[in-house]
Length: 229
Image 1 (tube, helix red, strand yellow):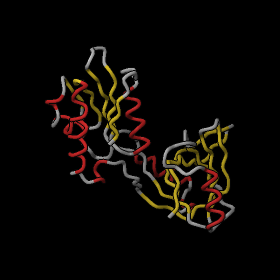
Image 2 (tube, helix red, strand yellow):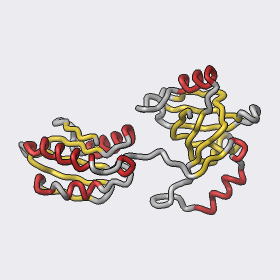
Image 3 (cartoon, one colour):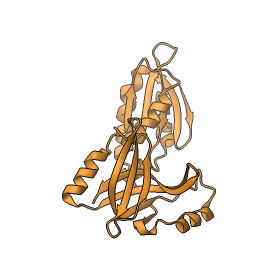
Image 4 (cartoon, rainbow, N blue to C red):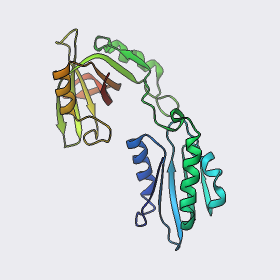
């Protein structure tokens, strides 16, 4: 778990910081800052995986002035002098919870080949709509893919061009927003060079969408991450 304290952070941003920490490190995060009252600190908490962050905080409520929230997110205030005890309590409780329950897992719904990514597949996904909370878009793992090329856009976004080891003429377009510099992610150039030198199989994890550009439409892979076996 990430538990951080920065006295000068504005209360309005600590929730955003906590969410970014969860996104980056795949573990729960609690971010503290000073409140308007001397000696009192406030925090915003965000969960990861299936962990019920509210239950953990409730077990420590004797340390707080007040707190509230739900399973996935919460807020609290407490005397600054209680921070060390709070950290110790939280780390102890988390050590007794299996890692799979308190971390973001890289799960996917179906493994498919490049040749199976077709308009008919995309159309069949329409039957599962509407997508949203409690009904997320299916997540796929691409097996047997090959990175033909990539482009960096605005320094942080990546446009990918994939093909198939079985059919090099096949072309699949993908995109990753805010990918460059993401903690724990290989750089596009590192992926490209490693694949070219070692011939390792590249795994691509993504959801599917339909992109419209200049009057044309094509299937687009919304790429979350890439790795090797």
